[in-house]
Each structure stands twice: as C-alpha cells, then as structure tokens.
Length: 587
Image 1 (cartoon, rainbow, N blue to C red):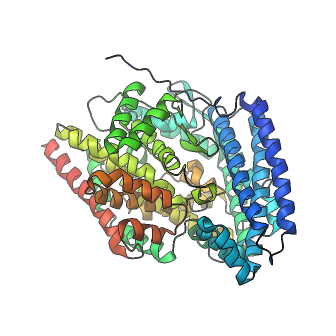
Image 2 (image 1 turned 180 degrees about the horizontal axis):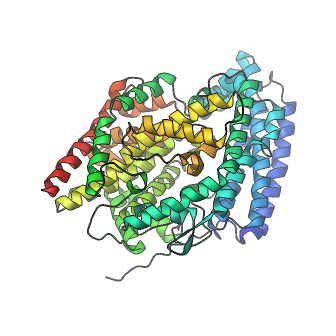
Image 3 (image 1 turned 120 degrees about the vertical axis):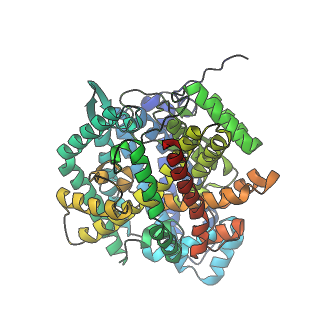
C-alpha cells in the first residue's frame, strides 16, 4: 500500500488568488460595498405598509451576508498564518466597517418589521416561509438593538479593540530552552513530556503576562465599557440578557445546567488529585494539567493523524467519511508548526463556495489530533448546512460547539474501545476527563469571572491587579480548590474574553459538551440512522431555539436538571474509572 503524504499547509488560492494583494478580492469587496449602499437606500425608502419591497430586501441581506463572510474568513486566515501582514490588517478594518454597516442596516430592518401592521407581517411571512423563525426573532429583538449612531461607531470603537488584542497577542514571543516561540507554540508546551519544559514555558508566559498586564487591562476595560454602554442605551440591565438571546436559550436552561455543574465538582477534583499523585505532586499544578500520561505511540506524525481521523469519521457514516477525504485532499487544513502563526485554533467558513478552512499548530500528540478533530467538527457543521440558506445558517455559539465535541467523542470512544492495556485506557480516560474539567471547572470559572468583572466595570475602570484578584477567586470556586496555584493571568490569554461578537463565550462550550454527550449516547443506539439524525440536528441549529431543537431531536426538556444530569453521569463514570485504574497501576 502506497504511503500518502498530506500537506500541513492550507490552500487559500482557490478562495481568492493573490493573498492580501488579490485583485479578485478587491473586486469582490467593491461589488459588495456597492450592493450594501443599494440595500441601505432600499431599507430607508421601504414603507412598513407595503410588503412588496421586502422580497428584494431579504434577498439582498442574504447575498451581502454571504459575500462579507467570504471576505472576512479569507482575511482572518491570512492574518492567522502571518499576523505581520499589514495589507491584510488594513483590509480587515475595511471589512469590519462594511460588516458594521450591514448590521446597522439589519437593525433598521428589525425596527421596521416591529412597526409593520399585522396584515403586512402576514404577507411577509407568506412570501418568506423559510425565514419565519429568524424574522420573528428579528421583530422581537427590535427594542434591544443599538441605535444607528452606536452601530456606526462599533467598527472603530468596539471591534477595533478586539482586533488590537489579536494583533498584540500575535506579536508577543517568549523564550523557552533558548528558542524564541510564539504564544501558541509556548502554550502547546503544556503537554510536553518533560515537566521541566512545561514549568519553564509556564514561567516564561507568566513573566510576559506580568510585563504587559496593564495594556491588556486597558483593552478588556474598553471592550466591556463599550458593551455596557450599548446595553444601557438599549435599556438592558442584566449582562446575561444579550448572551442568552444570542444563544437562543432561556435563563431557566442556563440555571439548570449551572446547578448540575455546581453539584458535581468533587469527582473531578478527585481526578485532579489522582493525576497529581501520578505526576509526583500532592496537588495539581496548573501547568501540569495538560501533561500526557505514558502512552504508546506518543509521537504522532501528521500523515498518521490524518489517516486516523479519516478512518474514524468514515466509521460514523458515508457523509462524514467523504467530508474528511475532501477536507484533507483539497487543502482545507493548516497544521504546520512555524513562527508568526497566531495562538488560537479555529475553523473559518466560506459560504459562497461551501468550504471551510481549519487552522491550528499540530503538536504531534493525541491531544493535537483531538484539537484537529474539534475544528474539523466545526467544518462538518458548515458542511451539513450547505443546503440551508445563509440567514438560517447563523446558529448560536451554544450549538456551534456540538458538532466539534461530537467529533472528539467519536475519536475518544474508538480509541478507548481499542485500548489493549490499562495504561492505554488510563491515557484515553485522562484525555476525556481533561475535557470535563475544562467544561465544568475552567469554563465555570470564566463564567464567574466575566459576570463579576462586568458588574465591577459598571462602577469604573478595573485595574490589572483587581482583575488578577477576580480571576483567582473565580478559579478557586470553579476548581473547588483543587489546584495548587491559580493562573491569575487567565483573563489575558483567554481570547474568548475579547470576542466582540460573543460576550460570555464560556457557557456555550459547556452547553455544547453536555448536549453532544447526550446525543452521542442516544445516537449509539440508533443504528443506521446515527449519521442521519446528527445531520438533521445540525441543519436545524440555525432556525430553532435551543429548547425546541433538543425537544425535537432528543425529546428532552433542557430547562430541567435531569437532562444535564444524564450527560454528567457519563463524565462521573470516567472519573470513577480513572481513579480505579490509577490505583491498580500504582500497586
């Protein structure tokens, strides 16, 4: 059998040829800008007494959204592979301005929809039955929309601070073992086999965070200050109002999930203590959390990782298997370890060509394989929705993490079932439990921090020292006191705190994790309908509330704790099994 070599560098030329100097991209943006101006005029002159013009308006909204998303994803990819690309930085600013104008026009549409007489509203729905959910949502959201003046300021005010964070973070380098590394490369060393390297990388990053914490505090404060100002202008008092609306989730659902998490900390603290003991510590150090337990085939070549992923995806079903083939064969993945790459892994969707691009720094470990699988799960979500029109593809963050988590489970389940020794089983359980700790402890800590930070920010600027204190307190509660020291600069290196499009991008991960666990457990008994049911759920993810989606596809009420307990029980079993295996191996 011939060995296949897969290129770990993606192909962007098939999207727009020429990089940041692309004439094709320039033409695309100019055309989109003209289209945007035409739409602006149509919306301003549209009388709410007449449903006729809305047919063109909804068509234009879809086409412009598709075009803007295509251009934005391309620039995101260019900057991820080289943050020093100044031309790409300039174009990103232009695209951000166009997106802000688009959102401002969409806001006008929402407000006009809220003022349409009932007979006009019924005519609009009759013309656009596929958009009933999203249009109803827009009509109901109208009162929460920022004014046109605020929307126009967001490009150079709000979103600009988020971009400054990304650029600043990408420019930082640290020295470990004499090598100058990017933040992403240094963070990857958290899973290095040598504990001394893990600790040195951690210390080097802490020194860098301490050096720059004043600047990061300014960025975070300005982001939160602008956000709170928008909320105030819209009459929003609770900082969770917007995140819950964005995630199409009821507060009762979030509260039920959080209660289950709060009640089940101890088993995961026990796992951390057991792992710490295996590493020779009495209590878990944060920089040893990612340590890989002894496992055969620790170093995984990229080609081997690709073959493994293709095999596992194909085991789910034909659609998922063919998707993996296309993603790797057509150059959708950039996994090479090289300088100047940004630290954060991501998946970017290209809706005009129905493609995706996946970005990460592959570190030749099983964890690296899982990171690649996670991002490919996002790409599969995009693939599943390619037949859905663009407005109904805008699924919330809570559901965005479902496919990625599901893909990880496919890998972990197969790996555990094929494990031949206790050492291998312990290794896989450790990888599974790392995800549980992240979702039930780390992300809970982030949620606590973000909520308390916003409350303090209402009263004024929050200093870097106070941010450290808030982070320490949140981590202690989130981890139930199970760490030896608290990485107080988590608020700096966690990019989710700086995402302008998604405040409180923490609980959506946990939602997606537990939802995927529940679906995976049900789907295993579905036989041949396994992949079909999964695809159906993903297709509906942009046109239903979270509660309705889960009721339709799983028959469960997610406002009740029982649903979340079912997923949690699977994770608790992992913890029990890990502790038993660890004790047996110690003997």
